[in-house]
Image (tube, rainbow over all chains, first blue to last red):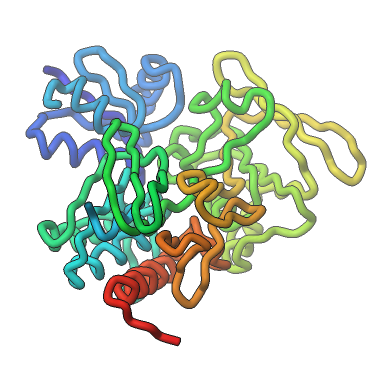
Length: 77
Length: 310
């Protein structure tokens, strides 16, 4: 499973997502969209919106921190 | 059956939970999440005993403190309460969104409040597409863009501060002719030439195509409609107490706050207490909410043990 997490530095919900990944030992790639302009454009294009966190799980795009939806998408529920 | 169900995991609920556990009351705490509204704050400088802490870390500290007492208190987190039903005196049923039901003799409502959303055409349509409710999270996405903040209270001023580093221009729109937020923060934003404060402005419409392109507002004194071309709109127009959970059971004031006796936090129903932002307290502060949550639990303990204070 390939997991990509788009974040900004002070975003509480991004930290919630990371804590959830750690609880379930999910390895992921974190992209800080403040420093990475290209990734920011990609995130907006893929998610059709302008908020973080955005989580890309094998191409499935989730927006925001929703524990139940995330656990389902990660198949750890 | 529980002696007490606490609804909410902010500073009022968690403080109450710690005290209830230490008093060995048979208690369940149900929380959607921990930490309350300030959990999204990047820096809290007034939580007493801690000079600086992020909202995220403070939430974790609260959750960890409460979990230390797991066993003495039952905790159900990640769960939303839909409503409270009264079966008879000192017998209530709490129903969750997940379809579970719990019975209890007493209720302590510390459910806080939820953010008021911008109620104009385009407000919902462009939610997440330029309309944003978390400046600490999303301000960096508006690097080099013109933006607007709606609301001149503390949260509005803080949203402007969050945007200062990134946006090329920030219009701060406020309904009244003076800002409400702290003078210290006002000074900071007024010192920046990126910030333009527009007073007496009433938002009428948010427009765009796939994403926000601007907003229309009315200049209240002249009645003239004006347009701002902005790509980001941060909404900070206050919050609405989550008193709907006990609607019909207790007195609720015109601002949807649960009316309490401020010596005891007890509501008009003798089996229901309320504390924190959901109650008709004047000051929505973490420290105040924590104190009021504790006051409520001590009074609930008095009620259980038959202790009379007056």
